[in-house]
Image (tube, rainbow, N blue to C red; front, side, top):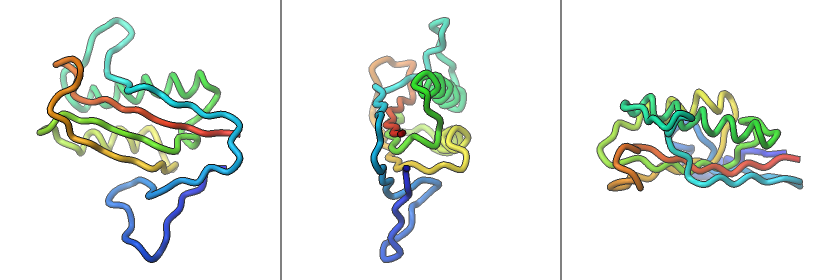
Length: 128
């Protein structure tokens, strides 16, 4: 139902994501707010890699509760505090997505709503 659009007449994506995803006749949509690395006990991991893993763990719970899986994710918007290394951020995304590809945008920002947060991710998923 969700198909990658990759026109051969334009440059390929810069990393492991789709330039565009076409959703044909979805019957349900999932839109998340920006999900942060706060654990169920209220703590926030210190390292960016641990925060990225925590965010994707939180997203996995939400996606699962919606009766969906990573292949249903069609769009990812990631906000990372300026100066943070992007490798762990992209590795955590790739670990969650597996072989599925989604349209993905990464934006660096001066800060997030709380100083301990270094990454925030919002997704859109579509399924039939």
